[in-house]
Image (cartoon, rainbow, N blue to C red; front, side, top):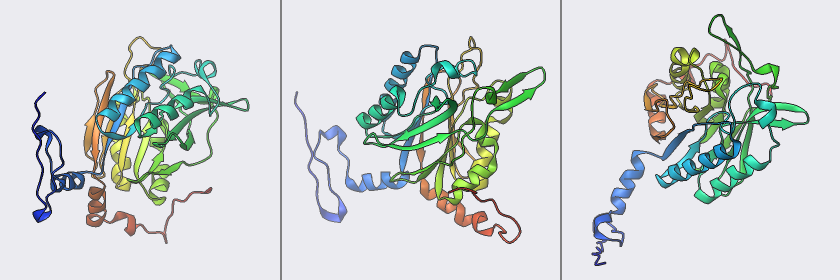
Length: 311
């Protein structure tokens, strides 16, 4: 096939990349492109079935797709490898490290991305946890977070759910570094507790990630509201990844995986079906907002404080 190539000049800071002419860009343009945003984030809104192997394989395929579209950080939903429900947790629970986390490690390394692995039921010394793991581009596990606040609610006539019937709560925070920013992890119900988000912000996080599976009662009422609240309170990006909605399931997830910027604006949002949501994360925007409305430096530590009791 006949191809045209273009070479470039060095004057005025231009450097053309040698490639087919239809793809010629300049490093000046590339620099401008990099200034527009720091990295692409992807949320995998996965259809979750009762078939664990199928869930894992489907998740890996979608992670590959997201990475192929330029995503540098990819997030899976809460309980992505099994249906969400107390009766399922014991059946699907596994050790960490284990088969599931090994596959997450492998796909992160294969794609050269940071992968936040939603959550899976974890079995550790006879106790079960709702646990999120995160992996680096070399496949190393960078973080493990066990859900701190268990989802125990009773809304008469609508929904009753008691995670504590099966799960134990975690007792540690989880922050990890990337070349872009620090990231703090929570899971679903954790987003209702502003103290956790504040502590992560104090630890230097610019992105808070909450894999979650809100339902048809709490979802329309609070899902977006809480994300926007945590983002505005702390002037950070907030990202949530939900399972896709399955009307035939015993627990029906709300869906609507979302990314909110530090101004409280929804910049990316899914519907209810299986999909991948992309968002361009501009960390400079967070700094500008913090300069314009400096609430983090205006807190009255002489009157009140939110602080971690453990490191």
